[in-house]
Every structure is written in structure tokens, then in C-alpha cells.
Image (tube, rainbow, N blue to C red; front, top):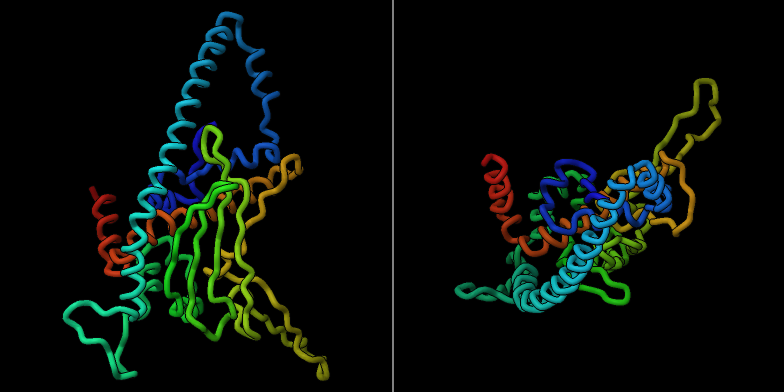
Length: 300
């Protein structure tokens, strides 16, 4: 099966990572009713001599798959090695951004009115990525100003990765850490099996993923109170409510399956963007250098 394009061409261009698709369609294979029986039916239509050639090609493919499996295993080990090397640098970045440590040549702030660290660092970095910018609503920005750090960690049993968003105490929700975890299995290609997000504990009246609609009573209904209705709305914080991947064997009609596939692809695309673009290149995004570099590539 071919690699899966991202949910939009803009997202595909922004990610530029090797694991963008993560075999999402493979995870939905049963739901989309794409199975081996179809493949066998296709082979039955071939002439014996062509079918024999295809069988040899299948064996070649099995050898390619074995090499790819070895490649993914070795690449994961290499990524783990460098993730450990990045950690002390990420820690220094965190301390400077949050005013815990001061850079050489600047005296440590003693006056409470003095500006510490780099206010709004992560919000500005996110806003300088065109894909994340589209996901962040204006009212989200007030909450994202409290974002102190974003960390990436590898997980095993099952394999995958976890994103942790660390927040200062804020007036929007009780959580100090919001997490998003992607569980993968590595067969020939990495296959996305499960996505887990944090349930946000919103303070009363502060939920950013919902809004209240008020409908006035019709003319003549003098004593009827206005009708209020709570509905879901666009918000970056919807990222922590991921789409659920159905169990193997679950049946979905074609329209529902297509819609779910698009949601999962887009969700994984955002997670990969944060992992591969935002976390390692946060300073360049904050200053706008990363955006300029991507524009130069596109213009070239």
C-alpha cells in the first residue's frame, strides 16, 4: 500500500518528515474492508505466466520489507541516542525562557516589575508555523501564554512517543501538564494503533473547546426564557481530544471511515509537526527564521 498524503497540501509541505503518514490507513484496513481476499481476486485475473512473475516480485518485496524493518529498528535507536543528547540543551532553553537562569552579561532581575525570561515564547513560536497558526484561535492565545515548555519522550511497550505541554498555574484549567501520546507498532512500516490525550479540567465558564449559543424566544413568547445551547467549537485544545481508532473488525460505512481516516491523518500530522518541527526549532520559529527558511525553499 502506498504512503498516505496528509490531510492538506499545506500540512504535507510543513511537516517534511519521514514518518508523516505512520501507516494510518493500515490501522484502518479492516474498517475500510481492504483485505487480502481482494488481492487474491486480482491475481486470479492474471495469466499464469504473469502471475508467476508476480509471485517472484512478492518474494522480492518480502526481502525489501525485512530490510525496512531493520532500518526502522536502527533508526529508532539512533533517534533515542540523539534525544538524550538534546536534553541538556532543551533544559538550558527552558531555564532561560522561564527566567530560571540568566544569560551572561545580564544581571539577575531583583525587581518584581522587571521582565523575566522570554514572555510568550511558545505561543509566538507556534504562531510562526502556518499550520499551527491556523489551529490556534484568538481566545486560545490567552491560555497558551501560560505554556512553559513542550517535551518529547519516546515510549516502549507499546512503542511510540509522548508530547507533554507544561503550563503555569492559570485561570483556564487545573492541569499543569497536558499530554498527547501516540502508540505505534513497527511491522514493515510504523503503524498508528492508538492516540491518547489528556482530559482537560476546565474551570467553570473557561472551557475553550465549547461555546454557548443563546437563542431569543420568538415574538409573542413574552414569558419564555432565552434558550441556551452548548456546542463544540474550534480550538487548539481540541488537540487533546483525539479521534478514536476503532478496534479491528469494527464496521464503518465508507463515508464514516473516510471522515475518520482524515481526522486521524490530520491529528498525527499535527503531533509529528510538534515533534519534528516545533520542539527542535522553537527558537528559529520564535524569531521567524524558520518561516523565512521554508519560504526560501518553496520559492527555490
